[in-house]
Image (cartoon, rainbow, N blue to C red; front, side, top):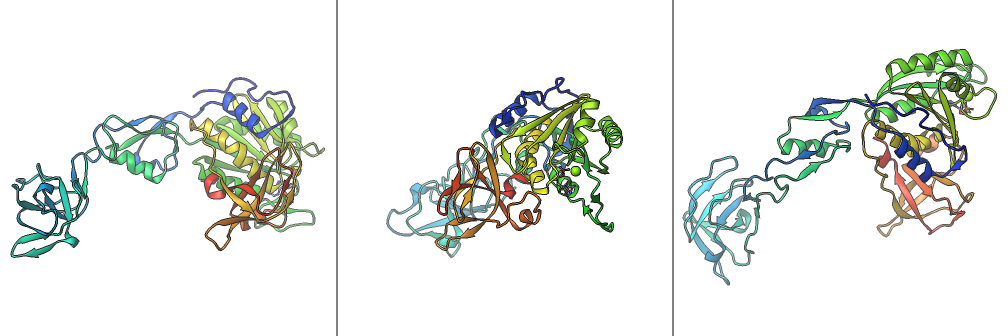
Length: 418
Ligand code: AMP
Ligand code: MG
């Protein structure tokens, strides 16, 4: 298994822009997961680790796109209907029958191999039958309703790329070129902790000052939806020794350790100290809202990510930084999620030099277009804002004021979760 270079997250400690932080991650991280060969049907969501080349054309033969009659276009009367004798029948999956002669039609079905000679297929709905003959109306184009060999995929072309995450249609494509097995990354093994004396498990009663741990559940879902194998290792109390021994143990059989909470600069924030004791730790001060800082470090050769405690900051930092990081560690390509320009339906003031994400949903304008409506409360602790919203609006560094009607970038959660 590959290992990261020592102290790969070192940087000058300056406030970092999002682009700069992502560039650094790309530069410093490499794939740490080995590969395995799996049945194609079991590869959904995995990172493909080989290029898939089509050994033959798809479709392999010229074939009919409809149920109908294969004919010679040159036999047709240019102005009126043409009557042709039906010479035979060709169904899908059948070896080719004797081709029709000039002046004849062949009954043919969708997916059946085109006979030698006829160049065009007339749809059965447009034909009439009379005494065993077919009557073809005028007006069809030469070559209509036929699919050419290789029109979908040419023999020798690359249909899937190493590094892509396999979606349902990609599995279909692999199967279409005949692959029963694929080489994919093993799942990244992630150790997940929450930290904080105030945290209780769902199901436990809350004493004054306590809250239920939600971050671990959110993160567990985010990680699993990206194909990680998650060890849910519970809540760590705000105690240096406990955290040090738990983190140390977690590195034994995981590829990555993730915590939330305990990484700001409060006296009770013991995570930084623990990672420093065990290895190397760097607080990346990101010019973002919500969510700074995040702690990146290494315990031995195992990368460590300390996310902020606030539930919204957890999700935003995960989507923006941790997700690309995980893809990189799994040997995947880092593709920027597709956002869409829509008109803002809100006013919002923001600090210059900082990238911000506000929670928003699309609402119809009534004329077929959409506008982004901001969730009314902005606090980084308001988890219900993520539940009630469909996505985020990303506001770039140089912007200071959003006005209604302005074009903004809307990022649906569906682009980045899963
Ligand atoms: P911290 O970064 O530890 O100072 O936490 C910042 C805020 O996030 C505090 O209000 C914490 O109570 C809250 N918080 C931290 N961890 C969690 C968690 N696992 N679930 C819900 N809230 C949390
Ligand atoms: Mg805390």
